[in-house]
Image (spheres, rainbow, N blue to C red):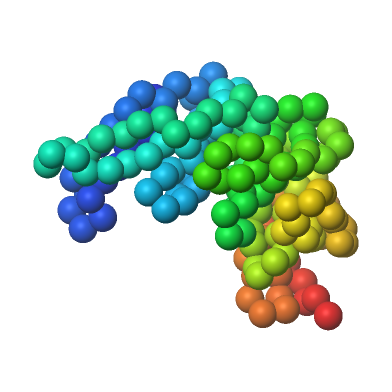
Length: 185
């Protein structure tokens, strides 16, 4: 994602393969697109989440909108896949978690609002680690049935923007000024 476009580039050469307009209500398009088969799922500041198919037809690259969902818009938070379910965080209702079918864009559930401003998510097995911007690490079950926080830990005193890094039972957390290692039992 660039300031105004969704682009595809050749991994080996960096050559532009395709592009399509992608307008965001802000100059920061800092999310990480979610690949799902031949589809890329993206969202921008205040705009709908959009799944775009990417295919080669008659010697050229073609992109088409597969689905759009304005109920799961976002700004800076990423999302993660567990099978064919995408777990993420929307800016709606002052911040709420969600699960959506990646193929159709159908929302399976949303959490109560006012959870956080932004989150950085990582998945390990059937567990999602969500580091909220206020330094709280929320461990969620990757459940299609509903919002299932398993544990909450205060892991930083300052704002957190980076993704938690997981290695075995260790979790590395970076806040604005420190890097901390946490060990989970």
